[in-house]
Length: 182
Image (cartoon, rainbow, N blue to C red; front, side, top):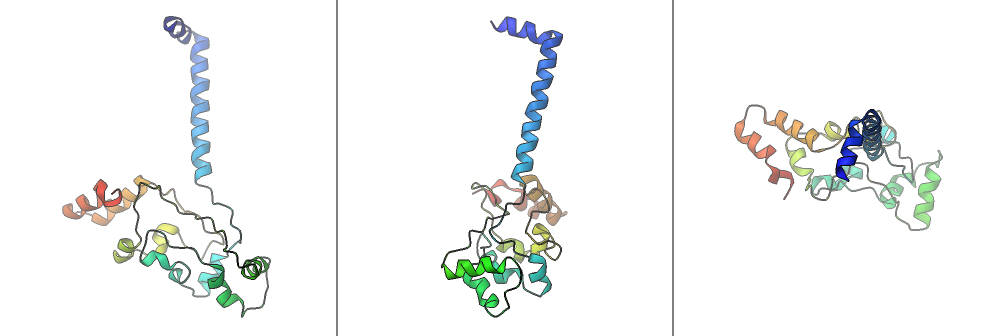
């Protein structure tokens, strides 16, 4: 049976079928990667550009970045602390008011997520002098948060190698599997 399949695959029609299957497989893989990197739809279109340009610091809304792996997402009470004093203009503020009135948490969808087998912490990156925009992009230019690049192991390792420069000891530490996978 296998001999017949191999013989068929060696004929022109078999080669065409293999090429079509290969292109289809690559197309599905490309589509999956593109879908995985799309910015998720948020319950409130939070205008980062406006808030950052008003002088708000990232850590005000995302205080978890100082201590944990997750930066944390702002609660409706954090947002309402300012917006209860500001005239309700814009289409998104009534949505915020509704979450507050109903005492419901805002169901934010995280944008920058690492797999469970990666133990990422913001603290060492902040201690190394990195700013939020080094990884998350310039929020003065975007409304809805989005990843400005594909965040994957290769991207992280490239940065770790640049950070280590010619310091061999630092390079070993920053590229050791146990640094991020423990």
